[in-house]
Amino acid sequence: MYTCECWRGLTGRAPLCLSVNSVSAKPSLYERLGGVYSIATVVDDFINRIMIDPKLNANPLVDEAHHKVPPAGFKYLVTEMLCWAAGGPQRYTGRGMEESHRHLAITAGEWDAFMEDLKTTLDKFSVPAAEQAEVTALIESTRAAIVVERPEVPVTHSSGPQDRAAAAR
Image (cartoon, rainbow, N blue to C red; front, side):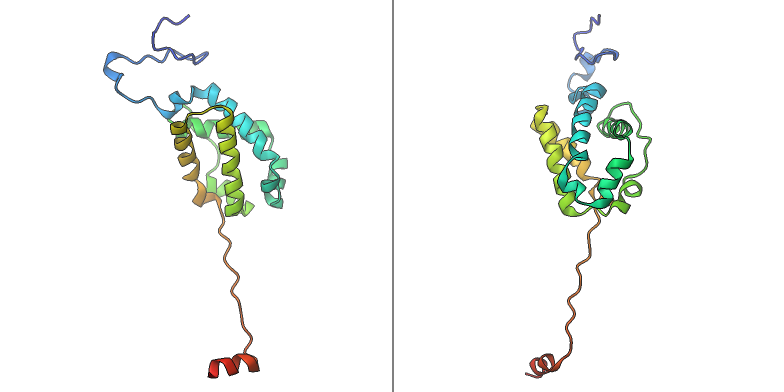
């Protein structure tokens, strides 16, 4: 089908041809992950995993969102975003991370569970460590827009007789 020696098996895509001039250039993360079909397969598993994660769904706002959004559309947008962020030709067309997540009041612990799910999925598909680190860094770069740090509740003390006596000492 394709005669280029550089073809890497990206079904249905034009051959990935690395000419002599570009052999020393490192392929993009998108290319190293196998392109859109491989990324979509990983995203499919990942979204299935997070949609049923009890640690994530313990947050009623997240649980409600998981039941409101059709999984196929969610998978499409995550695939589009990851492909785009990894250097692929896709363009992310969804809402910004803060706009689409802030109202869910996602905690640091829920974020950690989400990242554990990501690691489990990447391991399932034997994504090499270097690429896992890059994917993780891409996802981690969205943390500040997604995680709501809950302010600590200030401890108030009454100024009763014991408190006044302690302060006088």
